[in-house]
Length: 82
Image (cartoon, rainbow, N blue to C red; front, side, top):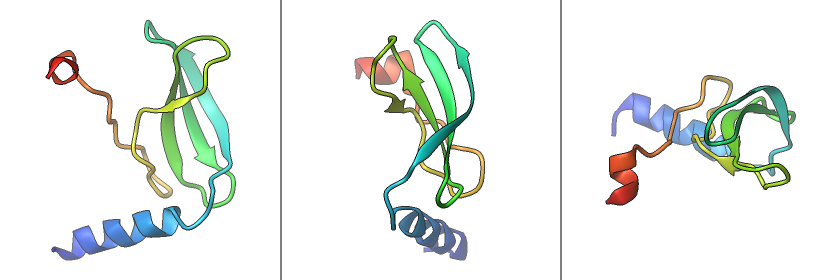
């Protein structure tokens, strides 16, 4: 493991140390539904969620990133078919 990997693993472990309380910082509509950019009110971690239909439970579309931009986990069409 590199020092960078160690820092990332430590950061992710720290983020998972509590149950997050997500609040929406911004959102926009897409063909798939509403994309929400959320932040944890406790630790400041960020994530991207997708709400596919009105009243649906938000689904995480990114990894949880402590205090920075979220890493997109959205699958391409080819990956979904595999």
